Image 1 (spheres, rainbow, N blue to C red):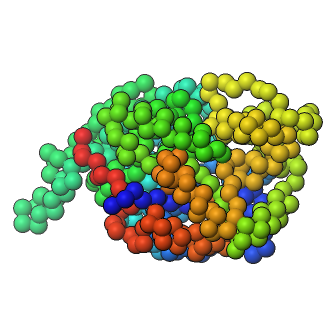
Image 2 (cartoon, rainbow, N blue to C red; image 1 turned 90 degrees about the vertical axis):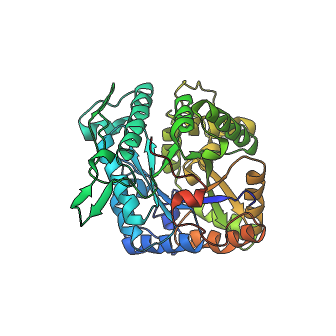
Image 3 (cartoon, helix red, strand yellow; image 1 turned 180 degrees about the horizontal axis):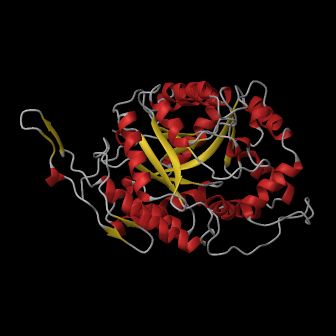
Length: 430
């Protein structure tokens, strides 16, 4: 079979556009579970590989509404598993503010509840204010990634604590669990001490799928070692190709093949029946963003206060620390390449919080995605609808059929697990 595109849905209940909830008819709540169930049904109609729900561990009334008011991801996805049958279900859980035993148990449980569709987005949590919610001081970038590397290793060891056939349940002999096929991990590391085993048997996928996003050197190394899916931040196709190649060439040093990691850049598609209608729609969405909101998003993404700058002057030069956020590099590169003013940059950043925005008819958007896919800038895309439900349905009903007609995307689910959707092997017990 020829190489096939993969599609994920980045689930923000009020849409990925900062002001998408203001669009006529759009959802304005991310705690309406009936509406979330409908999103799951639309994703399955579009034959998406997975739904991915990010998370945030603090509440900022000035931030995107869905970052401030949301259901806890694992609780929500466990409920969503009962009203979906095929689509993968991924959630963010922090390696900085969680513990390996609880995370391993929770995602194994979700894998059972969903019939093998669970995915964990292992993130280090970059926002320093979150430490106050856990009564601790936020670790620096290097330490967070050191913790994360050990955390993921421990979780995978726990998932391998049970052999696939450890549960015997032999009524005649009375043997329920074969103790020879269950083991403790007795892990003692720099950050974690975990005996194990889990009190749940080996998950249907062996290991739930591991997702990861991080553009720093430490983040890329973590993705190359541990991730099954890597989310990326992009704005330019040439840079995306270079980043894609860079990640893929790191894999052999960890005994892995290029096809072992699926690279999905985030993209917010604004779809209209024509290119003009799509541009008008995007302009209307942009009109809902106030300068204050836009500047707040830009400051958060670039880590600098721009309140004293001339908005119509060129974007100022700034030094990037070694631990820069991926958004910082990508946005500043685009600003310099296109000679943007600060006003241009904050408008771009506020639209989809720094993610790539494409706008056009279904044909135009399909052409763009095809070019990125076929020239190895991506293995597929993490679709970020500007608002729900219409903004997502525009893509599913308009763009997906074109990709199918061109032989780029599936016409039916051919497996039952997320690993099967992604073409990933089930891990052997180590």
